[in-house]
Amino acid sequence: MKQRVVITGAAGFIGSHLAEALLDRGYSVIGIDNLLTGDTANISHLQNRDFLFIKHDVTNYIYIDGPVDFVLHWASPASPIDYLELPIPTLKVGALGTHKALGLAKAKGARFVLASTSEVYGDPLEHPQKETYWGNVNPVGPRGVYDEAKRFAEAMTMAYHRYHGVDTKIVRIFNTYGPRMRVNDGRAVPAFMSQALRNEDVTVFGDGTQTRSFTYIADLVDGIVQLMLSNENDPVNIGNPREMTIKEIAETIIRMTRSKSRIVYKPLPTDDPKQRKPDITRARTLLNWQPRVELEEGLVKTIEYFRTKVSPS
Ligand code: UDP
Image (cartoon, rainbow, N blue to C red; front, side, top):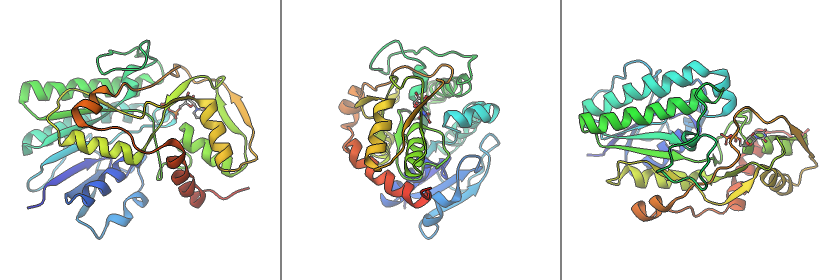
């Protein structure tokens, strides 16, 4: 008998790659998405495989017939511009959606994996960020709706683990890029790529000295699957520790797309973290995971995808 995995947010960027990777590993996959920020185009190529799509908002009760071995809770707006426009759905899916997904895992005796985020560290005062760091989050700022939803989701997940004995995992995902990010996603890599491919100004927020560490999607998915199969219940960072400034990533994308774009500077969004870099000692030692895809290699694959979506002006 094949093992069955339920993925919420399966039509999203990471959810769709995760669905595909699990199908490739021989699992039967049920994908749920309300298509608020997801897109069926991301999963249309899976329709002839052992994949069932259910359009549903997971803040409401989730009905699944038959056995379920894993519940992976990926549903959430995840780009800063999305959660600024969708503050209440972001809070609801992190809170009510996590509760429903955990309830499903408990009812089915399934393992549960929560998609958490480096945003739980806020604008971090500890650098690089270890899982033991409690974070520096502004609960009432515009990013608070995402950060606090994910922090609540982590607390709820640990409560189901401790109180109900559900076998839960928490992955803290750092900035990830790759094919299937939306052209108008608003995050740095897709924004810079679509601007560079159109030879438009590349919009760097602030002075561009803030840092991020970018993980290629295939590396992230490997880390998630390894965590899903592990015995670990405490949070694990999955991310690439190669840290760079936002100006550097903008310049790299302009160079690699051979673009005529110039960098222009725009105001820094409120509470934009100044630095971000994962400490991946836990992933290395407990999961034997580390990133393998070099930035340039991942960017080449992502640029190829964006070329099919963006027409040059
Ligand atoms: N950023 C930027 N220009 C853009 C989009 C983002 O300079 O068009 C900056 C943003 O202010 C942040 C960094 O790039 O400092 C990464 O932003 P992103 O939205 O990708 O995700 P975050 O890491 O902030 O959640």
